[in-house]
Length: 268
Image 1 (cartoon, rainbow, N blue to C red):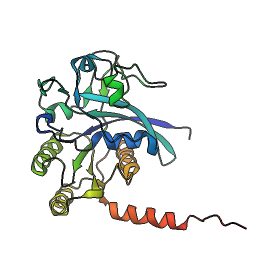
Image 2: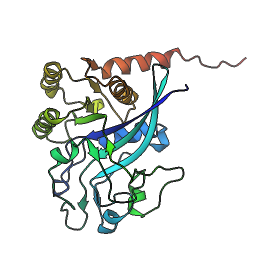
Image 3: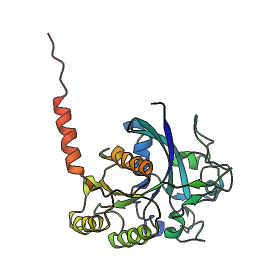
């Protein structure tokens, strides 16, 4: 593949509220699985509670977003390099108050251009922040000499019964999608433990708004690549194609069938 195109992707979704001891929507786990798909590299816990020293360090850099670096997918024989941003909200682990509330999440996370105040390292995991480690080997730096322009958004919606509040997520989804001037993919996360009673409302929304949607589980590694392949297609086409829902059950069935076809060795 001689050609390569680079696109910036912003992953957004309702942040957890640390004072309510909430778990997150699954943004970090989704990105983690895409960036490092090996089972040993999957980390289910990415805390947003950090110390003041962590907040000042080169990974967070006093900003409520993380730079995950880049990974590539192939679309129509062209390699698409996706550089991933995660918009989050960091809390002081001492008093559980947000470090920076100068802008509401919905406004901050829908900006089409981003800059960093200084050297910002690629994020790998929470230990990297907590131990105040330097840039990872072969890691990337967030650009400091120019504004980054977002090409596609991914809105992560936690559909599990024990996750974030459904109404708050739904309201944020509606608000943010109205303000996005770029293509967006909806990722219905934690689909391995989906709360079925909410699906009718969500599917009605996606059908009305014609938003490309993927039912995904980072834990089970089902449809993760499909999320970012769809992202690359949208970025490459620079349009808003009317695509349907990428089904979790269909992908799960296909993977099970594929495993059954794997020949087993026999002793002679």
